[in-house]
Image (tube, rainbow, N blue to C red):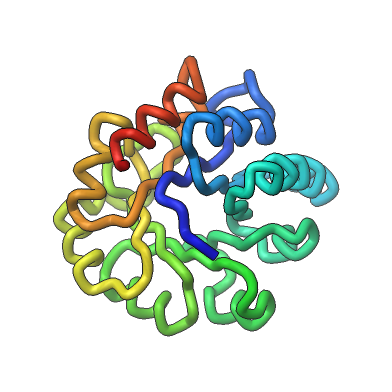
Length: 205
């Protein structure tokens, strides 16, 4: 399945005006071509309810829909795929469970992480944190555009830059070699979600 260039990660902690499904609908209206559902909710039935609603929005728009962290949730609601962090299930194990029909993305920090993700069967990687961000606590300093350039130069799969990305700096990430960008706060916390997505879409187009 085609890996999009503008990944919007839905989040209801950086804002409380919209549900995950509403965020997805507005982001897609603005040009997002991949939606990733992200929630730290512990109630699995609630996760299924929320993610299932997002899945419906994405299917209606024929947009790639990914679940963050949870391989079990991906299977339960038949999402298009999953994005796995460095402390989540390893990509290789997830590939064994999900087979070759699901998209699997993996978080990386450097070229060594990239090589492992490629060997284990990732379809794309999310590289970051590219810049400082207020959407989540960062365990490491931003990797910067030089790391984006280096990783993108050796990658055989799409590289998606993540963290601290806005309409003002998104173009620099793509010009450094990234296939696209992933955002949370720049869209979800914006006053006008659709307009914010559109600005990012135009910046990387």
